[in-house]
Length: 204
Image 1: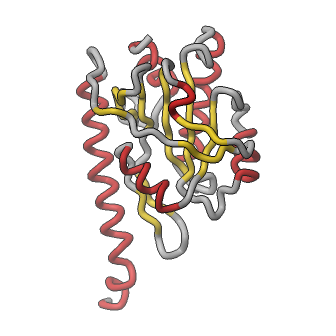
Image 2: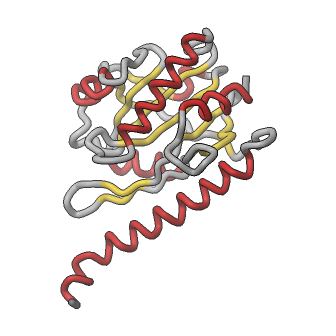
């Protein structure tokens, strides 16, 4: 029993930390959903390798509303359905003429060993991404963990190479301020594209 505890203590501690942080972010979503979105802090800038091999960063879309999401492409659970919801956001905003003119999206991998530019390009095609206005990005592992942390996303790497992480989308306004961390829909389920679009339009 002692050997089992020693072997698995890190997973337990990491999981508890992720759950605690997620609870705080869900509270943030609930409190701010009914009124004007407050300014939380300045969004940290970044310049990273895109899936097409070019460099892309937050400053490239200054003056636009931004959605910033941290993920890993081989994630077995939450990342793919969340990315699917972002693809629906893209679809809705394209219909309304807002995607690109008013809104840009960034999906940033914190698993550069597996998420090469080629892998990210393949992954992104599943979601019919607009390559001009929805960038899939990568960078050095520690730098990506630090960047994720600066966006209130905690990332823990397990000994087997998998990750535990907070599932959160940062909503950044035209002036570069984080205005909301979107972690779930209004009912506490997985984040829903309709709610994301609603929050984006609050900044329009």
